[in-house]
Length: 145
Image (cartoon, rainbow, N blue to C red):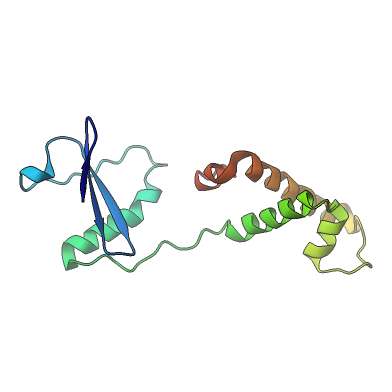
């Protein structure tokens, strides 16, 4: 599928599960064969583009998109935990309530506990939960949290 705006042309290629978008900087793919050139601007922008390049190379070599997927983000368990903490806070849970659930302790949990580590752990999760709430999905996707 090819779409246009005032200055550029975009080509979407999909196999149903993976989609790639090619931005045509000059010329048009409608006028015949084109030369494909990949621009890498900045190191931080490189990592998210590697899976797309892998899929495109596979498509060019074999005619099919690669089944390779990027490994899961190692931050996910902690981010999910922070979302659970945010839900608990919105339901009115105290730091002690949250700590009791997270550590799996019953009513007998020492609070704040030896070295205050349980409470520090909960405070850090609460701070992360508030940052996630403030920045929203953009903050997670841009790795600001």
